[in-house]
Length: 178
Image (cartoon, rainbow, N blue to C red):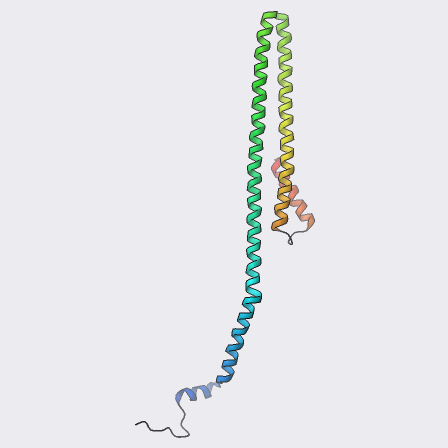
């Protein structure tokens, strides 16, 4: 049988607890306090911070998507402008050929006059094509600048000042022009 411990004898865990000053009630209250603080921090600090970070990540993704869309629109506008120039060149060539045929039938003098007229038409057609291209580029730059400002405003709503946003838009337009 087990012999009962003498009143002065303490078990080894009790002796260790007494040596290091461990108090079970105090330890339990500290564990409960730690768990409460951890839960409160999780609810009121960690989760809101994660939500803000996720919102920021989404705004940046939206801004990048808008920039990609703008690039695609720019490429499309440049393709259209090139197509207009090509058509103007084709029409100019057609007019030149028609003018040459008519000029050879009328005579050398009329032929020279027709060639000069055809060259003027070509020049005007090229100028019109270049003017249309310039207009399309200007319109596209404005739209791109507006979209850049809008994307920057979304992704940096509270981070940048108005002057910084304007500078970013101007830099984007200059880079696009180059």
